[in-house]
Length: 163
Image 1 (tube, rainbow, N blue to C red):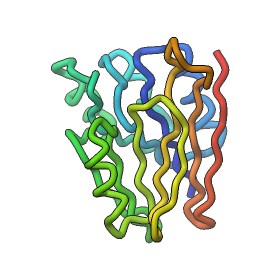
Image 2 (tube, rainbow, N blue to C red):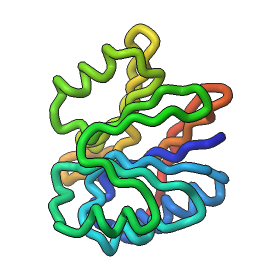
Image 3 (cartoon, helix red, strand yellow):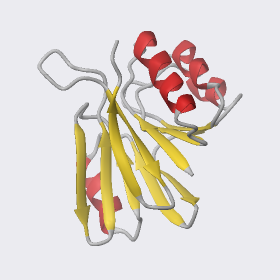
């Protein structure tokens, strides 16, 4: 199975639409958003041809974001845990580094996170921490990326999404 991972889309509708098209073209069965979708009108775009999971980010304050996502997917308020194809996966926006560190120290296979808008992969014990990145911030050179995890092989790759 392929899982799409995305974060920090911040209402950039053009990049969100291209990311969704990419996930559908890649036949991702699930997409995990690590927070900062921001507005319900952006979240609605994720009502697509995959199972959608989203965790609240520090900019996801819109009062009805949760109810909009729950019309077609699953919304988690803080830290989420999923078991997919015998993989234990946690995901969290990443606002508190101490929470990220605590998740990585547990026995998860993967911890997905966002918040920094920078791609990251690190491994501690048997846990892989993965940040797909996010939309480019003014002081950053890194462009918008998403990631795809192949659950059978446990391999993943980053993909740049161009505006």
